[in-house]
Image 1: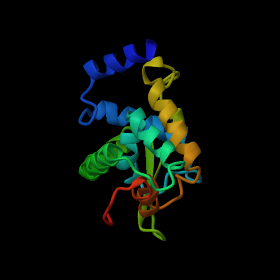
Image 2 (image 1 turned 135 degrees about the horizontal axis):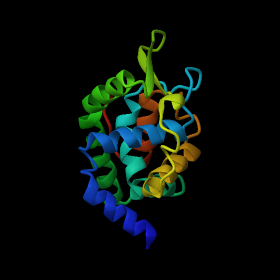
Image 3 (image 1 turned 45 degrees about the vertical axis):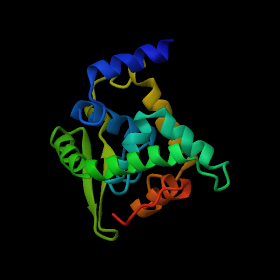
Image 4 (image 1 turned 180 degrees about the horizontal axis):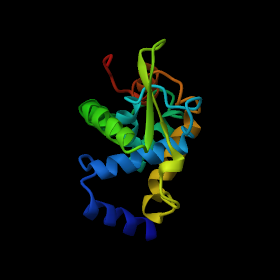
Length: 180
């Protein structure tokens, strides 16, 4: 019952796909749970965040990916549609994440650095700039758990490139994607 109440509160508080505060908080939750807190442990290619946000925000997508590991190629049509919608959202959200990451960098909450070898921008969280107890709230417990599950399924998520991430999350679960 408690989980349903917090999900209801979030629906009232945010437009999940469009609210910049919600996207910023979920991005920071993701960086925290993926342990991206130094340049050495940075999330290579911040554009992955646009696609991962859907999974952090939606338990059903995480469940699809978890079950996808066991389904041996059997993809249910409605699951594919849900994943396709998440992929499309990620494509549309890339420019918002671009602006958001640079805004968070200006505030000092994250750091960005161009990786000239790979041609991507790495991102990591500046823990010392966040207020004490910033992540200590039950309201976002489902997002934290979703990020943990995604990390457990794909432990190298920080270092894999965007194409590999899209393959693992979408193509391997029956969704056709195009190179981004």
